[in-house]
Image (cartoon, rainbow, N blue to C red; front, side, top):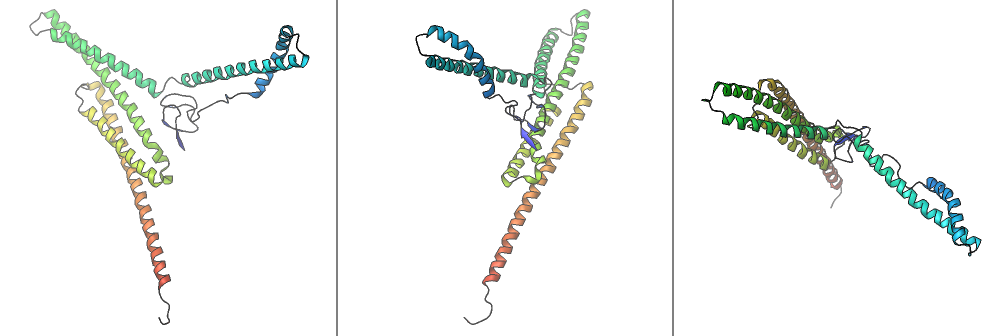
Length: 287
């Protein structure tokens, strides 16, 4: 059964150790450790502080009775123990929270951030090369023409890297789109009427986004895909087509279940109506 990651909402199995999207540890659970107030630790701290508090209070409050001194010592040890226990719980929570988010580095969010930064850097590098190329005229000297050829070769390398990073980013987008549909696939035979409607809407939105990705890759004006990046592009377009086909099959399955549910409902109504008519029919005798 699938559940949402408590941090990012990515659908994961309850037994998953890490979230694929954000990398958090134990993503199905809000609290992975029992970090509440520990009464036994509190009692141990109180008993440790009591022998310390008693002589201090005895020296400062020697005029009071022994019972008063013991009571004040006991209260003081309990008071300071509660403060220490709350601080321990607070710092434990901070430590566990930090550990949960720093355990897995290689997740989709970190990859997406690195890819986005790299795309921005390559775009800037390409713009700088284009600025220099615009300044070199065809009538310039032979040396500048050689520089121009080298810049064109560098620009092709930059565009090739840019196309590859763009494909990697689109692949992450596709994984996230597939993840949004996965609960309806896993729970197909247990979906209620409202959940089926939600599934149909999600599938339609996913197909729209898949088509947008395909259009961006086939008619993308900002990047001319070099020959080296074309095989990767074609493979990814095939993945998009396969994902779109899977969405269509899932959509048909949901519609079939809805149609079967409605057919069963109306069949039951017809049977009930027929039984009611049969019960109301006169069985002989005069009126």
